[in-house]
Length: 262
Image (tube, rainbow, N blue to C red; front, side, top):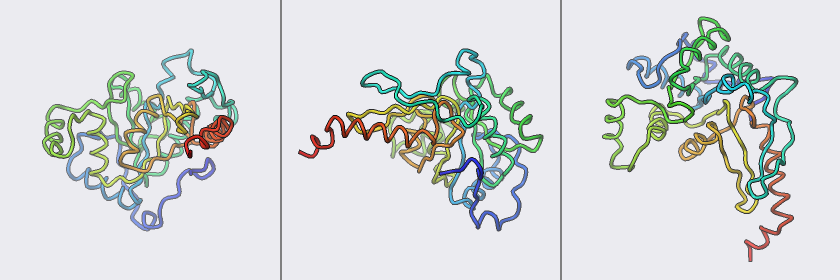
């Protein structure tokens, strides 16, 4: 799991390669063949790792949610069970994600992919440049408003559906994005952004994932290893031990494990 004090620990193989070029901000689904191969090489040199931020500044447009308490809801009893522990210091959710983006983009070794609402793409670019300078790099995937579904041109969609029609039925645009990542050699995703909710479900002995980050995590987990970043809001990797411990206490208290073994 990543550390706030040492965000990136690139592989020895990646460190031994030449310095990655300044990639700039590119459209993920509209790369030239040379750009695509360059991305494949960078991903391969880092053991298949990429970072994905989902709607990283979504809350900035909704003032009443900017200071939203960091809690977790037990769906069975509809009560808050996790205290506010995710945000270090006095950072609010937006500042936390800004800190993460700035630190991560200062190192071009691990590619960063941003899913952003189509109407906010230009604002996203402006903020990324302001955080990381003119040399900021990354790949942008426009999505529908307030949804995780990527906007993919009809030509690209038809081409991918033709390629995968014998393996999959009813491919939605999120699945096409997942398959595109797989084609690039992705094996692990470090996932951050706004709207990650960890919802303990003691009866099912699982942690339900919700919000934009949580919803796309469920797709990604079908193909890749997924690790939640500390740069997610309102919950993050830091909450997982708390949520898991709470869930295990509830399971033990209610005897779910004992009943399931009988």
